[in-house]
Image (cartoon, rainbow, N blue to C red; front, side, top):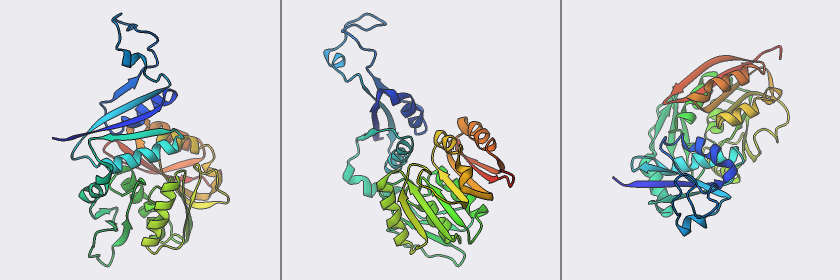
Length: 306
């Protein structure tokens, strides 16, 4: 079996957070941290250290995982880039064993038409699909933006949007990635959709996917979470990570009309309770929780009194 080393370099101060995010990909981590190397001796065992180790950069570290050939490496990389951007962490992601020029073929190998929810069909831009009358077709060419529908976090969020989003209302999608959730909201009958992402490449990808889907009521723009938001919405979706959702919960209710709904996803099981309590404390009631393969998504409604 062939393996790909996925190595993420970062500033030493961010090593714990980067390790936590990488543990969502694989539990077995290889961490390169030379910050404790101060001279030529191993501080624990006292043996002499190699000159190469002594000269390593003490201000940076790296976390690696090893991925088997059945893993969709491009989607994992896109997911990581989206999460690190949301956390405002600068990283350098390298793959060892996979050539960059092979990425396009990797997408085509792993990414096939997929039904999520009741009627939503996610179709790769390069595939043909014979749709049934009730099917809602979303064509996606993800490029290097996160969001193909194949990942549990996106699928869970899409399922909740399909179930709870009212037609004819104003929608906000935070951390839009490829724009897949914004496009789904539009095709399900949203009046207008604002799609935000901190990554300019994601915004470009989302705009291209909106054009490919003949969606004209989605506005894609760059924003650090909801900092660029003005006005109020009836429905907000955010498929990001738990820490960012908790941070966003402090004021997300300010941008929701009374009775408006908040859908959040990208939450690992270990952090689900923390996210739940953070949002409930800000004047929301839980409508539904979904989970799949250790990932969680929530649907909340804003209290009319808050």
